[in-house]
Structures are given as C-alpha cells and as structure tokens.
Length: 143
Image (cartoon, rainbow, N blue to C red):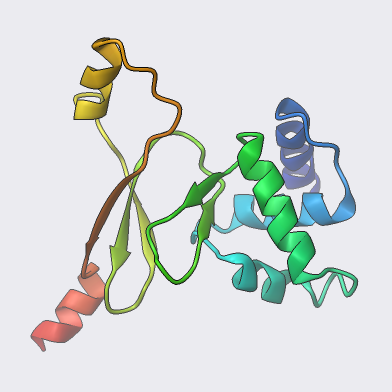
C-alpha cells in the first residue's frame, strides 16, 4: 500500500472510531483500491499471500466492525454472498444475473426515499438494487 493510500485508510479508520491494526488497514486499503464489491472470500484470497496470519474470521469480523462504524456499506444484493462497498455515499447497485458482478449506479435526489424523509421518516439506511444483464453479458447473449 503506497503512502497516500495508507494515509487515507488511517484517516477513514480514525474518522469512524476504529483502532488501526495491520489487518484492518490491509482490509480497508484493499476495498478502497478495488471498487468491485468484494465478498469475504475475495478479500481473504487477495490478502492472505501478504498476511499469512490473516483468517477468514478476521476478515469477516473486520468487515462487520467497519460496517457498524459506517466506514463501509454491506451490500445485500446477492442471496449467496454478502458484498461490501468502500463507497459509503448513498448510491444504487446493479447485479448481473449472468456474470454476478455488482456495479454502482448513481441515484438522484428526486428518488422517493428523499420524499419520505421530508414526510417525517427517519432514514438510517438506504439500499436500492437493480438486477438484470450487464452490457457485456447482454451483448454476448445477442450474438
């Protein structure tokens, strides 16, 4: 992890009240550099060669802590795997039925969730999902 990313990871951990450790820094650093909505297994596989003492339990527990503290978002779009997103600004997700990739989609403030907020509701979490076929899989289907 380069110096700039290291500094950004440390800042985010501190901002969200999470004590830094080598494993926490590595997990959040991986997520901040790979916006592919990884699951526990993907993060573990990517990091264990560099951190041989890392366990899947540590990855899972760290992700749960980061999510509870608001440093990352847990993405429940997939019934088989929980994905995680380091982009904690409200946005929607799209999951391809064929390849399983998860993509970010920007949401506009005109979304109905904002209207409910103005009507007196207190919103503490927002998740908007779309499912279908990504452009690559859709193009392959047409050929």
